[in-house]
Image 1 (tube, helix red, strand yellow):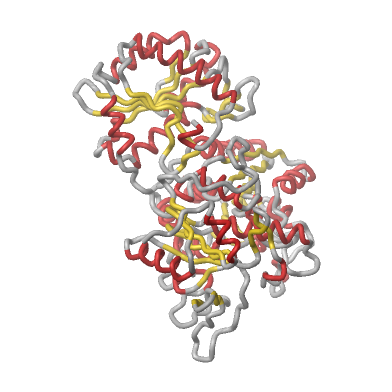
Image 2 (image 1 turned 90 degrees about the vertical axis):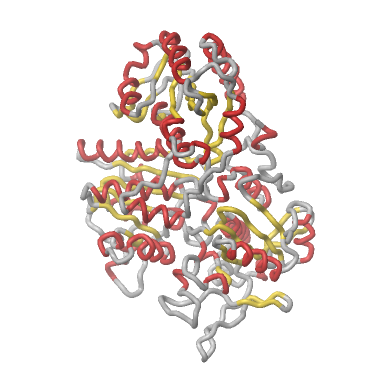
Length: 604
């Protein structure tokens, strides 16, 4: 586990492997299928922190490759969570576990939709659940859903039936070559977020949700149904790092409830993100575009005006709703309270490591405290998946270590200090010797058909455009200079796209983006210029307040501790925008030397 993924196995995982895999091995031998190829903790394409317990590889009676996803549970008993057939309660474990048949179906569908080795045969992948310690009467509630999902479920008293299932699915031919085909087969990319999002809202579901993502989706559905039936309110809090699937869940919910003609809205505090969604997803359909709104739009909204409000990037929630130009968008109430009161079921999605401005108060603790103050029941779901950055959980942990932010999961090595990039076949990390070299490398990726953007810490002045409607080359590093992205609301300067669409429209690569235009969006390749506000000294990185030009960060009211955290969060956001790779350049000489020991260089 450690050599393959960089992750240290938990003691609970080791015990589960000993117990479950021993029993599975006996079943395979009793089925006379002991020569199958067995993959343990098989990582899902695009989400390397989500893995199937076991994938069996072999051939069917017709000599065709066949794979079975096996979801193993050591549960002795389980019941449906509040009557919901997609969520279950297990004694001694946290409530509302995802139904194992739903989990297994997610793995099956993900492999069917992305694995080129199937060669147009989705039926080549099936899924099964095996609860080795349970008796049928103790898990009776679970069987109906397994039938619905077409995922057979077997328990201890049905071991003989499980053995027969394995015999029917596989011949006795050795499975090594079938395993090689699966392992070496290309995984078809699912496309960038905006493309997938547009397809979702047009009725072509492009998101296959796994594990905690599926659990979060089912929990929201459950809470909405319960709230309606009881004429009450529920709050759902969904946390996760960059690309962990929060937006995939939110957009899936948005489409589902919009199609049902429920009153629903998707709100953010970001002008860039909201307008990008309106343009890229809504297009000319005003009804779809109108689903995307702002926090301030609900400053004084009537109670339960909506059935559901999806609060994306809730870490950006402000203390109060303030709009200088529109009294209806101002309120003395806490903004969290305004959003919470606006819908029967408010859904908050956040990543506390993405707080980058003073005054952003969206934390799990603050949302839970507000729910308690309003006497509203709430649920929290933590997402561990990593969809952005090539699905590389190793990279996510590496960035946290580099910036000394700590790791979301203590089982990852190097969670409190930097360590050399260990490599990941799904994500590339490179260090450039100059900004020109970084730009040249990224342009070459664009020629190959990828998308790319360059961003930087806010360490240079930001000038108004020249009289001839050209942008000023404010970001100057030696003899290399480029302008910041166009500033202003909907104002185009020359061929540069407006600031809201810098990340998505042609021409954006010729300007340098900042945190406010990049946050919440993604591209295949990210180029990140580490400015002089983050330098390496004494073996680690420290922040330099005097080098930063962001007026919101350098105010006297912002403490040194707050400034340090906000700058580190800023660079974490910039470093995690890429889907395929990142190229880093540091302006400070000592910082580049520090990074050379950690990051491989750009190669032609």
